[in-house]
Amino acid sequence: MIASSMRPSKAASAPARTKKRADEFLMAELVITIDGPAASGKSTMARLLAERLGATFLDTGAMYRAVTLAAVRDHVELRDEEQLARVVERHRFDFEAARGKMLVRIDGEDVTEAIRDNELTAQVRYIASAGRVRARLVEMQRAFARKHRQVVTEGRDQGTVVFPDATIKFFLTAGAAERARRRKEELDAKGLPADLEQIREAIEARDRSDENRAVGPLKAAPDAIRVDTTGLSIEEAAERFYHHVEERCPRNR
Ligand code: DC
Image (cartoon, rainbow, N blue to C red; front, top):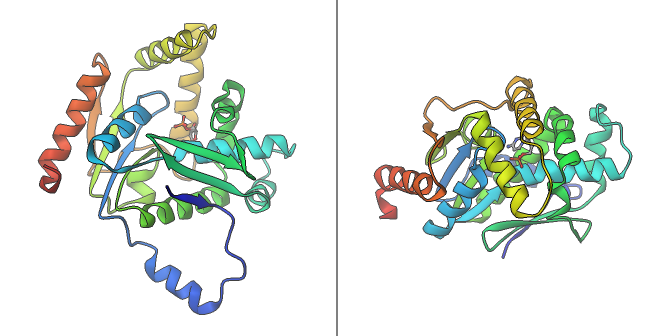
């Protein structure tokens, strides 16, 4: 059980800082990155793959969501990068890998469910575009990977920015209509009313924002394996991922 804290270590000495820089790119033995657009099934694939490999699952979207929730609760102007950076320093954020999901806490309060709220989801784009916040979260993600032997991580920039030397990189796609349908099914299963067209519009808006931001935009690494899950069941898609891992990474056979 590993908990990571985003609070910066207090007054790191100069030698300690030098050491940190030297260690910065040391990684887990195995890092698998899965990037892709909103609701493309990254979390499900990453979780299933991690389970099958006995690896740790890292949900980086949860980190952006947690900072957004803290900023909203602090009534911070979301376009003000300076203020957003202060939110990150002011609170303690813990991300803990537990049974195929990430437990997220802000100042000790469990917000794992609260960060999935639809309204909050629409506001994450401000935090995702704030370069200083991104830089801090990227550091956190690398620190997380250094603490675990095998990591399956998912997000938008994992194969391009955060882990350019990852063992295997995937880029997941699925048509917007299919992604909207899947999201509606999830909401229906939870008994939450949802309009398919509205979900689709929200997904497409997030795609545009993710693809067009200046820092850490959503894009496939040149060496990423592209997997289009349109029309595939979860089991078929998971099998496809595992097959690629077996092929590319014989030590996991
Ligand atoms: O994967 P998700 O829906 O939980 O991600 C929430 C938002 O966080 C998404 O709209 C974009 C942002 N994000 C990001 O910018 N970079 C990441 N590595 C992960 C998520």
